[in-house]
Amino acid sequence: MKYIVQLSRIFTGILFIISGFIKLNDPLGFSYKLQEYFGADVLNLEFLIPYALGISVIVVVFEVVLGVFLLIGYKPKFTVWSLLLMIVFFTFLTFYSAYFDKVKDCGCFGDALKLTPWESFTKDVILLVLILILFFGMKHIKPLFSKLPTTAIALLSFILSLWFGYHVLMHLPAIDFRAYKIGANIQEGMVIPEDAPKPVSEYTWTFMVNGEEQEFVTNGSYPKVEGEYVGVETKLIDEGYIPPIQDFTIESDDEELTDYFLEKDNLVMITMYSIPKAEAEGVAKLKSFTDQALKKGYTVIGLTSSGPSDKSQLKATYDLNFDFYLCDEKVLKTIVRSNPGIVVLEKGTITQKAHWNDIEDIDL
Image 1 (spheres, rainbow, N blue to C red):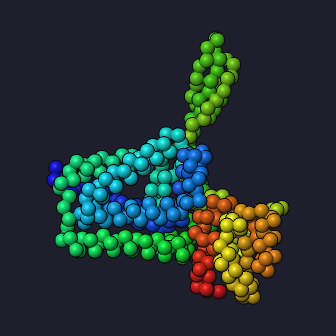
Image 2 (image 1 turned 180 degrees about the vertical axis):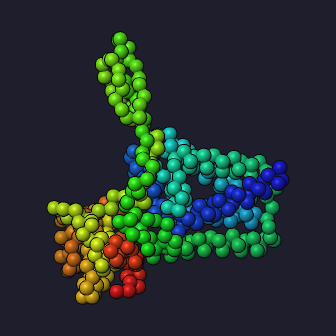
Image 3 (image 1 turned 135 degrees about the horizontal axis):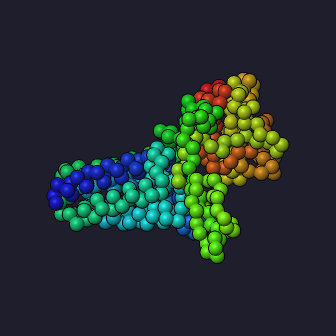
């Protein structure tokens, strides 16, 4: 039992640190995932949506710290009980999400590793078993060091986690796992190769045959049945190849301009997923920066999901000399974890990205 507990301790501690650190690298992204869970069609806890970012930071810091606590043997009873309560909650959440097909990606490992709901649930069940081993073998969890160094390491892990979370919120994730990272080409990210796996669906057809309902399963073709058609249900078996970049568009009121702008040599995109929610201090910095970019020959555009009245009011208030185009809110949240954010492209390839706090770091 002693050796089983130690193996469970090492595996669980490392996994919690890795999982927590990946989300701590991008707490804003995890908060977006929490907003999905809090939505009316999932947990129906919409009153928590305004607090999603705060909850996100607390959860991921706690996750990292508990992993460190477990490895060094700091306060074993508190640590194991906390791990148990956390994993029970997450196991319920991933089961609910998988069974009712609510959230397609749990966000357990952020954008670094995408897991299906059932894969997430399986992972949580394994962790639950490991943590139950720790719970019943708690007497075998001993501190690695004496009291003072153990307490110092525990406190340091908490302080560093808080600092790192604050740092990436005020700037951008230290490691960018998303499809819009520097060096990525947007056009290439949207391409589906000719030899890519195709989606596979199962069709269940219902017919009334000789007064009885009968079901016939095909891969999409209409069954040859002598009877009265009643209905059909479709089940997705395999999604096939999904390109890294989806739903990215640049649209005016009249036309789609995606290809036109992505062919530009020097393009600056100001992303603002929601104009009313944009941080005023960041918006105030845009005027001088974009004017400078225009003088140096850059094409400057804004991307937002907000409506025409918000766009015109923003341009008038801040005397901005560029136009805003329409883009999906979720896409804009993915491109830059900042509102507003700045992206510089060369023929569709992202060469620079910045949080509005770091707008001075953009090299024109």
